[in-house]
Image 1 (tube, rainbow, N blue to C red):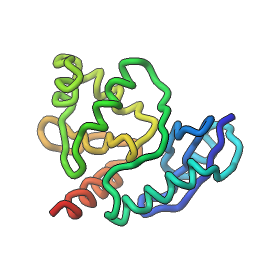
Image 2 (image 1 turned 30 degrees about the horizontal axis):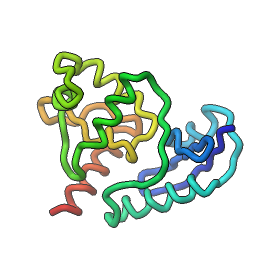
Image 3 (image 1 turned 60 degrees about the vertical axis):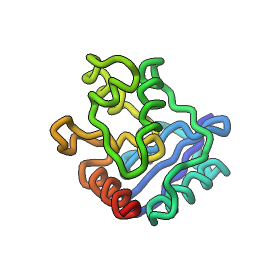
Amino acid sequence: MIKGYSYQTLMGSLTLLEEEGYLVEIRFGKDGETKEEYKIEETPVIEKTFWQLEEYFQGRRQAFDVPLRPRGTEFQRQVWAALLDIPYGETWSYKDLAMKIQRRKAFRAVGMANNKNPLPIIIPCHRVIGSDGKLVGYGGGLKVKEKLLDLEKSVIH
C-alpha cells in the first residue's frame, strides 16, 4: 500500500510517497496531493526524507540516505542512477548524461527519462541543463530548478 504525506517547504508544496519502506515518488504542488489515491500517513521513511530535504534546502546537506525504489523501465532506472553521479553544485547536459550511460546518441531518450524521474531533488534531475547552458524543463517548474541550482552553487562557493 502506498502511503503519502504533504509538506510546505521552501520549494513549495511537496508530497512524499512511500511503499514498503521505500521512497517511491516526490510530487510538486497541491496537485500532487490528489493525483493518485494513497493512504495519508507520515511514515518513518517519509518523515526522514522530509527532514533531509529541509537540511538540503538550508544548505546543510548535499546527499540523501533514504531507501529509494523509483518505478520505471530499465533504461529509465539506468539514467536515474547516472543522475546520482552528478556532483552537488555541478550541471551536466543531456549529452553528458547519455555519454555517462554509454549511449552517446540517446540524448533525447535520456531527456525523456530525466523528465519521468519520480524522485526529483533526491535523484538530482535539476542538475541537467541544455547543451547551450540554458535551463530546460523541470517538473517543479523552471523557477524551482533555478532556486535549487542557485542553492547548491551558493553552498559550494
